[in-house]
Structure formats: structure tokens, C-alpha cells
Image 1 (cartoon, rainbow over the protein chains, first blue to last red):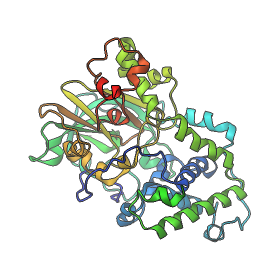
Image 2: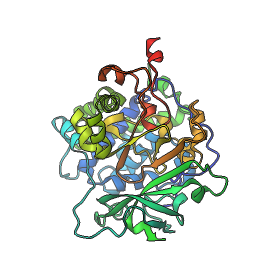
Image 3: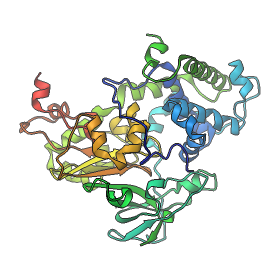
Image 4: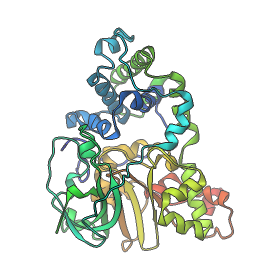
Length: 219
Length: 211
């Protein structure tokens, strides 16, 4: 979606402000919001692409005025409510008011280390051949899906060079909508700064994105 | 310190944050009562990323690459197994690529679409990495971003920005500082800063840590 999350090349956000000796979390609620999000992945049954869509799918003004963990927490609430796992009256009351829905599995303390260590690899076996090879010129397609995509606006329509064939990976545009992983070949595509930003762009800069085959066409 | 004292870092008014704090607490209670979460598992998740997984992990990887040419070659060829050799793997680091800085090439990592970051080697991302100023300008005007960090690259150095748009996570291997010949891996790791592994900073010099 062309939402507030797609920030590459936008203006007016001011300077980057690194915080000296920044703590991992700013306050207790950030810790709990973070941990609840991780822990609910398993019983909630959503995948990472659904989570990302739930975070970005809000008015851009809202997205830009929330802190990162506020966005995470709002997305968690959305996904829980969509699945009927929690209702608004329960959050307002601070207590469970309705019977729990059965869930597949919950994260036990004994699972934490193993689950984090395993992570969620996205590479998949395939019997298809990659359409592009390193050195090929490709154009990022001009696509504008209202659903989740990982092709940022700033590269759409621009010509780059295949730098690396990464492998066959879960395709977020499909996975986010619940129609399955639909794995596709993934490439690192390098663009010249001036191709992306015009003649005033930094001539010494090159930018790459990781782009799935359906995002690309021969150029 | 109360939650409020921590939260003054964000430019948000107090009532909005209080509302969030209350809702987080309420939701945790509801999810616990329903049996969907075990609070002890939550505590462990928090402890893992507060105490165990952080940029010191990445610093050990970089220090080994500086000290051991065979390891450096393995890391640059296929970083995920090379990093697993040092003991780090898993969530948000399932597919890692190591990027070597040279006198002619400087690498810098961003996620313009969200906050993708190599957790097993760097921990959770700092606020600035997830912020609009960094995500917007890193790809369009990277040298101005480096200036915000008080850091200038020579004009002729190529700057390469890696936008983490898929599940590939990037770790910058900065150049080894001069004057560190014969140093142990442990001592070298003290020079490796988080920002130098993102590409928004340089490693410390031997002089910096002698202070």
C-alpha cells in the first residue's frame, strides 16, 4: 500500500537524532508491548507479512505521529480483534469477559530460547528457474497495490541491475493476504542514485533493494 | 524511575502515552486470563533482548573477521553460517549478508518500509533507525544523514545503501582501525560500535578506548 510507512525519499522529517546511551526500551509498556507481540504470533496464527500490513494500514498522519511501539501495539490489537481473540469491551474492562477461543499453541517459557533461535526462515525449495541473472538490466514495475507490498515507491519505474540472485523466498504480497506463501525468486537490485533522484542526486551513491521476480521486468 | 520519566524521550503528550500504558496493561491481563500468554515467557523475551542479544554479538563477529582472514572470507561468502559459528542465529537474522567497507566503498543499511534489522547480531534497533528522518533520507541523501551523525566521508568514496525490503538482513563490516596490529579478538571487539555495523559511524580508534 502507498501508505505512511513508505518513507524513502520523502521530505520534511527533520534531522536524525541519535540518543546517547539509548536504552533498549523506553519504559515498561514498550517491553510488554514488544513481548506480547512476539508471544501472540504463535497462538494468533498470523505471519510476519500480516503483522507488517496491520502496522502500516492506517492514515499516514496517524502512522507518522505514533511511536514505533505504539504502532506495534495498535497492530496487535487489530489482529487480535479481527480474529475474535479479544474484544474491545475486554480491553476497556481490563479483564476477560468472553470465553477464550481455542488456539493451536501458546509460547511457554521453555519454548522461548528455541523459538527465537529457530526464527522464521523464508527461503523455499523450487523447481522453477530464476528469470534473471547477475548483470541483467531490470525495471521495477509501476505497481500500486492497496494491499501489502515490499516494493518501495522510490524505485518503481526505474531501471537497475541485478546484483545477486538471493534464492526463492516467501512472497509477502501473497502471504500478507492469507492466500499462502507463493514463493518467488528474490534478487538484490542495484540502482544508481541519479537514476532514482535525478541529476541533482549524489553521483557517488548507489542504492539496492531486495525485490521479488513479480516486481521486475526486463529493461 | 517511573514509566513517565522514561517516556519523555518521545515528543508525545503525556495523556496519549498514559492511555497506551493502560491499554497495554489491560491487554496483557486479558490475554493472560484467556490463557493465550504466559507472563513468564514475556519476561524471558524481554530479558533476552535487554540483557543477552545486542551489538556486542556483532562486535565479536567483526573482531573475528578482523583477526582471522579465513573467518573473514567465510563471513563475506555466506554470513549466516559464519555468524552461527560464533553462536548467533535466529529471529530477524535467518538470512544475513555481511558487507565489507573498503577505502573506496562505504556501506550503510536502512529499512525504508519498516524497521528490519539483524537482531541476533545487533539486538533491537534504536529509535532513530525506525524514525522517519532516517528512513526517508538514507536512500536519497545519505551523506546528509552521515552529517547528522557528525561523520563525513571523502567525496570520492562510493556510498552504497542497502534497503532491507525482504528478509535479508545486512551487517556492515567496518574497516579495522590502524594501530591495532596483534590485538586479541576481545580487545578488537571493544572498538566495534553499533553504528559502525549499520554504516552510520566508524569504529573507535585505539586512542578513544585508552581515554
